[in-house]
Structures are given as structure tokens and as C-alpha cells.
Length: 160
Image 1 (cartoon, one colour):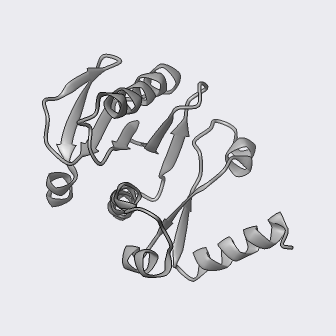
Image 2 (cartoon, rainbow, N blue to C red):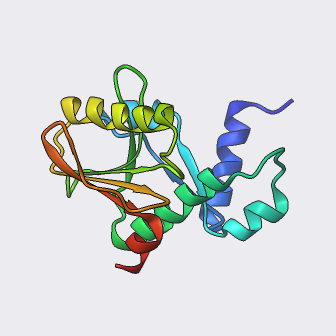
Image 3 (cartoon, helix red, strand yellow):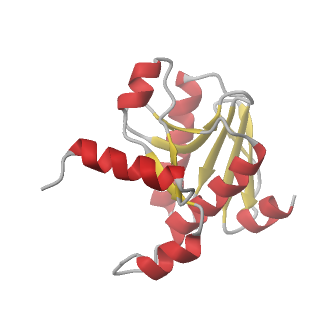
């Protein structure tokens, strides 16, 4: 049976070989960042699909992975944020004070409310100047915590 240290070593190896990249949780304490769970993204989403196993399409996670890869081209300082109440924002770019949330589809009210609630909580807890909500369709901009929030299709965002 493997240990936590073995898993950490394997993840470090995969990251060193540029197969996966990890993202820390944003926190003011470096120690808390190191202890908190990390999110893992693949450099090659095609490999994930061919090697991975899933009972249903994992298109939402793949979309988030795609957004991460694009953000990585623009910034090396990328985190995810978890609010005190446990809501998660997919990406936080602290140098730009920019939150980015990815939701494959926001047609269902429960999904829409969950994504917006996470952003509202984050705005109350950390310094934010810009919010982007990426989804399958362009929508009218929203105001979240007094910040104009661009709701944009991932396709259009990638082509910017």
C-alpha cells in the first residue's frame, strides 16, 4: 500500500516531466498554501481522455483544463480560491486581482446560483478588481459584489 509521500513523489515526477501542472489554493499563508489540496491539470487533454476512465463525459473538467492552459500562457501566478464557507472559484490571478470561473453551461438555475455564490463570497474575502465568468454562451454582464462581471463564451474568450 502506498503512502502519501509516494503519491507526492509521483505527482512531482509527473509535473517535472511536464505531463501535469498543479495549482495551489490561494491563501495569505504560504504554509496553508502548501498544506491545502492542489488541483491538477494536464498539459495534454487528449492523453487524459485516452488514458482516463469515466462513466460519463467529463467535458466540464476538460473545459476548465483548457482555460487553465490559456491562463498559464499569460500568467505563471495562478491559484484557485476556496471561500471560508467552502465555495470554490476556479482561478484567481492575484497580481491582476482577477477571478475566473468556468461553468460549462449555466442554463440550470442551481448551477448558475452555485457559480455566482462562489464569486460573491470570494469578493467579500479577497481583493478583486475583475471577474470573468466563462461558459458555453455569451450573456449579459452581471454585477457581482459591485464588480462588473463579463459573462463570455469560452470560444470567444480564447479568440481574444
